[in-house]
Each structure stands twice: as C-alpha cells, then as structure tokens.
Image (tube, rainbow, N blue to C red; front, side, top):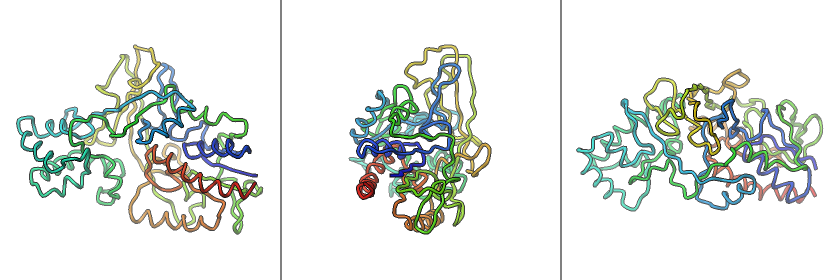
Length: 389
C-alpha cells in the first residue's frame, strides 16, 4: 500500500501512528517544515527556555480519553491557564468574569449588576457576548456594550483584520463571559501541558520504524491529479491524508482562501520574571494582540537571570512570502465558506483523499476538537484500508 500523509500536526501524526499500529504497514509522512508538530512546535532557546514557536497552546478538554491517549507519548502536567487583559491602562481579569465586571464599572457600582447577572443567567457557567448584548435587562446590556467596545470589538477586528460584523459569530463566541469568579481561561475539566513540550510529544508519537518521515519537503510540488487518480512523483497513491491548506492542494483552482498569520517579536529581559502572569491580551494596543512569557509555564527552566516575552502581531497570510507564509487561522464567514465548499465539492472526485484538520477543513478547531475529529475520521479511513489489504 502506498499511504501518504501530508502534515505532522495532531491530525497527521495521530493518523500515522494509528494506521501503522492497527494495520502493520508503512506510512510516509511529509512535512513542509524542518520540525514535526505543525503550529504546536516548540524549541529551547539559548537560555534554556522552552518557547512555543507559533504562539501559546494548552491541552484543554472535557474528554479524559484524549488525555489518556496523549499520555502514551509524553508525561502531562495539570495546568489551568489564567490570563490578564490590559484595558484603560490597567490589568484586568481574563476570562471576563465578575472580577472583570467590578474592575470595569467600579466595585462601588457593581452590587446591583452582579445580582442582575446571577438572576438572569442562573444555572449557567458562561455566556456569549451576544447573549449579554441581547439581554432585556438594561444594566446588563449597557455593561455588555461597554465590554464589547473596550475589548471584544477592538481585539477581534485587529486579530482578523476585518470589521467584527464580517466575522462568523462562532468565532466571536469562543471568548465567553464567566458567571462567577472562575479565573481559568477555559472551563474545561482536564487542562494539561506536556512536561517536555509539544515537539517531544510529537517526536515520540512518530517514533516508529514503519513511519517514514520526510521533513523540509513541500508535498504539493509532488502531488498530481489525473482523472480520479492521485499520484506522488508519478507513483499512484492508494490513500492520501491531507492536513494542509486545501486551496494550495488544488493549486488555488478557485482562488485563495484567506487566513490570518502571526508575526512574533522577541524581547529579552535580565530578570527572572517580567509580566504579571504568563499571557496578557492587549485589546486597545496598536498592531499587537497579546504577549506571552513562556518561562512562567516551563517546568524545568532553572535560569533566574533571563526571561523572554514574545508578542504577537496578526497579519494577512501571504502564500510563498518570507515572513507571512504560515496560515494560522481560517477567516470564517459566509463568503469564505462558499469558496471553501467549492474546493470541498471538487475534492470528492477523489474517494481516496481525506481532508483532516484546521487548514484542510477550514475550521477554527481547538486542539481537543482536532483530536476528536481525527479519531472520527479514522473510522472512515479504516474502511478504505481494509479494502486495500
């Protein structure tokens, strides 16, 4: 069997491991970059600080089976991430919660509003921005408008590079308001970090002699489509699992799908700690969205004399450019979804092609949803593999 997987993020790596274990066959895994793990990759800098190369990532899920599976490849450390946001010159709580409410309106003005929140959203842990804005309680809707203008609207427009009204609500609803004082950024039951970083986890997952790993190779330069046949360097491919950008796979046949990328600025400081917490968001700052001090969630860094803060500047993804060529976030709205569906419909001409992951499926997946989706997709892939055997 000639089985080819493009991309070594969670989708590609999990599927490679599952296939070789269940079918005892070889799989070729092609990765465009010099490292495995896709946008989850990390590295140790010259000061021994483990830095996540493409922005901070944490494992968050309500399904312990995901944790159980990942523990096969790395020790995992429980870690509940709590952030701050910088609004009107002050650090405030993120996720937005009752502490944020008191910080924004003043503790002396918060008593009635807190009671209103408890009455209206009784039994709910978190609510969306749109639920707050559409409240018939004028005090709640007035506070929602304040929060929307100072944080949601400014941060979201900067993050996505388009007016907030042109962004799908599902994207905006990812950041929710906590009805209470829970200061965990996400209210997921199981929150972890790999003890030695994500790259080590992926390296261990792909450490099987039946997985033939090819780094620094652009698969799209070798893939060709002839009628209903997929070829790689003119050799017929029995199964292609593709986790990259779908428009690139088909040579932008219907046009370029828009993504956002991130540019990272590194600042080193001669001190043990620089920021008040590990991640700060900046909804009102010009050009940048958040800063991360990775040392604050390193488990083995003993360097107390140096730290680094990495600040993110969102920008438009430009294929084949020097510094904007990593697609990070699909820009989901009606227009872009229509364009994606053209590619999706076209891909169905090839029954042995499986699209997996954030880029190939053009979905703003969290890590846990990527893993869940990958395991579901594997059930379909197994049917193809059984026929091939």
